[in-house]
Image (cartoon, rainbow, N blue to C red; front, side):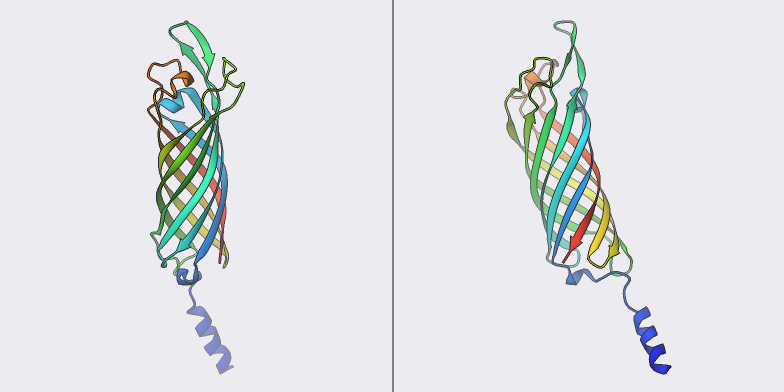
Length: 205
């Protein structure tokens, strides 16, 4: 009986979550919606978003992160002041790839919950979907330098599995000349911004 009480006491002292010092690699997969903001939002509706990411943890709180994904936006009906007609902007597929760092802001050894943030840089390959605009012609596909950041709330449901909600932002440095055909507004799109809101899971090793 004494041994049982000792074992129970030791067990109660164990952390609710595995210490992240044992976590080296992790893989994420998520899906949700992507919200275009600003001038991009004037010509594109929200669409689906999917993504994957991998992290390598140098310590309990700092990891190298690399990932990629896609936002599939739908063109809006936009009034063209020059022709006095309503035209449909072509739909866009935005393929993103990036690398950077992820930081755990909370002490996950004391709870099943944790809060992470990530920052990074990479590129966005913008691909207009053929036949989706009023012209029926797809313009050029281009890759633009992109900065990204996000905040993620995770809960551990198993020692090797977390579920999470992730809100990210992608700031795309687009080209006004390349994108002028996308919109009847003069000047094209110089800077594009899209915000994916997703849910997903993490596999930890």
